[in-house]
Image 1 (cartoon, rainbow, N blue to C red):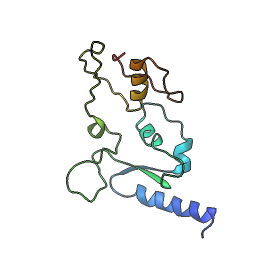
Image 2 (cartoon, one colour):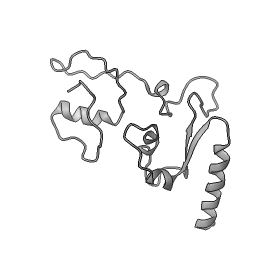
Image 3 (cartoon, rainbow, N blue to C red):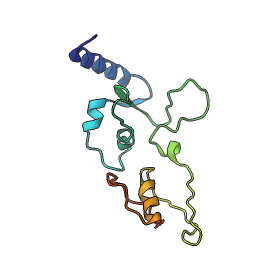
Image 4 (cartoon, helix red, strand yellow):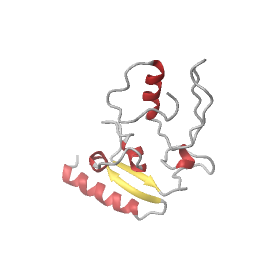
Length: 137
């Protein structure tokens, strides 16, 4: 087995190697991204929201816009924080209570639990820093 210092050195070298590859915008170690204070609407927060203890890799990679790391010639992964990759329709219906609306401003998936809690008139998720979707409730 390798020690902590060797692991740190390997990750450092891998990070700098990746940063010199075309299409790579940012690379963080697990420790770096966990400690960085992003704002709720920062693109980088998209990646930080995906951190799960003991389930993530050692490095997190953010690609440049319109770059995709894949074995497929076509399609998308919906795994980037860019609008073209995250802009999807959402339909919420409650008979007699919700009207037909279109939200033009940028919203985030983590706003959905708070929105649903408001619709159901129950408490919001306690750890959520997100507000409900605008104009829904």
